[in-house]
Image 1 (cartoon, rainbow, N blue to C red):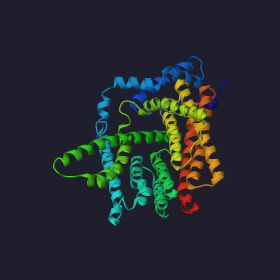
Image 2 (image 1 turned 120 degrees about the vertical axis):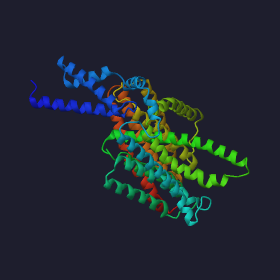
Image 3 (image 1 turned 180 degrees about the horizontal axis):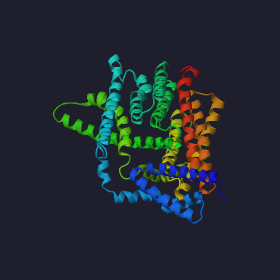
Image 4 (image 1 turned 45 degrees about the horizontal axis):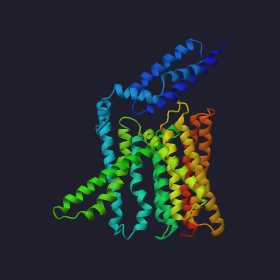
Length: 461
């Protein structure tokens, strides 16, 4: 017999499950709050009917969710029924609504414009002290992320209404990045310059992540949202860059037709300042537009996952057939690390967009093949790096690559195991999400170690 306390506990458990389900529903950008309310009403009604038929509340919840079907299908259905939303989402000032909402949207637009202008202006500040790209390449290489990422973080912190203690942490971390970029005197041919130029943007981008999750930093789903935000910012930035390329081509052609050469303006002002501002604009686009028809993450991952899987498998076959060793010189190390990071990015991007309630399918098996291929390549690279370090000693590049590949090896191995368990229906998909979000601080910590400690540790070589 169920006691009142037991019934109350079961009801609290059901409410927690419904709360988690609604939180996921609200992440579907095709669905509005009213849609989520409607779906929740249907879910509660179905749960009540099943409980009345004799099921426990936990069983009733699982059956009711299953009956509702895939959220992807529900999203497409709502998009068809409310197709006029497409036009509303295309309006720069946002979806019309209450006067307060419209005012907020316009204010957000103006704050974004101010932050983008600030990023563009910051890039030109060193010129006031006689510095330029040609003569001071080392300074610009190490400081490039400091020109724009603080402004993007500031925009996100304002939008999330971040508390003052968090704002202080953001300022302190960006200040630490500025010190790390400028306190060491690095030569142009220094390996420390290369690893600092690569790792500082990574460290500072994860600082941007703190601003992004400011409103709910304890929620692992918000961490996955930031991963998706990262991918979509990159896509929007590339689209802006392509559009900027067309603009520059027309500018050169039209001005040259009247005898004016705009190359200097383009190289010294338009290109660098536009690139800095575009990072902020791309972040605003992700926040404001949030995918007009559907999230682009599933589209991109389903397009590139099979392609990268084929490339990695072909590479492993080629290594086996030719019995060749992997070159672990600086350029090759960077290339292989970028390849592994892209593979991890595809996995993260797919995880962030996947319906966690959906059963395992063929695409999950394809992802497992991709992860296993990347794991094999990472193992080969680690073997080669370890052998070179043992034989010839270590360098900043090899030490940084060794640490990064160890971290990637642990991540990929854990991901492969959790994916396999999920495919075999021996584990939950949420375990894979949690595994990935727990690695974000590890990446940040390693990036800061490389930036702050490696230059003096290797005598600025």
